[in-house]
Image (cartoon, rainbow, N blue to C red):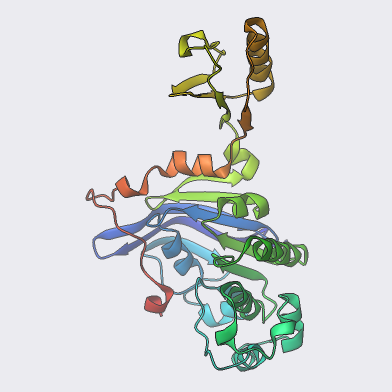
Length: 323
């Protein structure tokens, strides 16, 4: 029998808490061996969605399959093949890093050697350090060590680089890339959109309980405009600026901004215009479309995102409550 290329299949998932519907017909798949990023503002429904996918609560309606199993009904069997890195782990501050992993190994099937997993997350030099003395970034790496202790086929990473400095964040990105290269499927949630853009094969953006965009980063970015900005040249008014075909021009004070589909032709026209007028385009900048642009355009202002009753509600349900 041919192996199913999808390790996660979510179809028309709905999840309600009383009369409040947190997830409203979400559908997506995660393919074997890829890194899939699920993005959304607070209150978008992504945390609730992952709680269902991870098996911590049954769906109100819809279908969810993970590694061919029902994640809620087959929870114990599924957890032997998956790893979960929560936003915040519960550690005993007086235990050392080594003692923490050793204790966790007793409850983990197919647990790898402590030295092996600490070496993988680059905490081997901190093995004898008490957890209470670790930095925030080091604690996140300890969270990651416990999540990969059973060498999971499928790994859920919830805000994995929170509290890390830029160097530690990039080191963790490389660890995640190494896991993918070794065949692990990764599902990532993050508020660092650069992180998703750097790591993800495919992304899905949630808003108000629905998937509003999905695909590769390039597919999601397609159709988004780049932006050309520069200070308004001396002795030039807004009415003097050239109108570029298909571009949107905005002038706020002395700041000029063009939203363009193609930057090269637009820059050529601007430089030709500047040369003809004998003015300098000092400080000109080109910023290509990013996931942040898409995210803000699709998700809008979370302060005004209403539910069906016109009230914004945060996605506050925790995994601890689900247990």
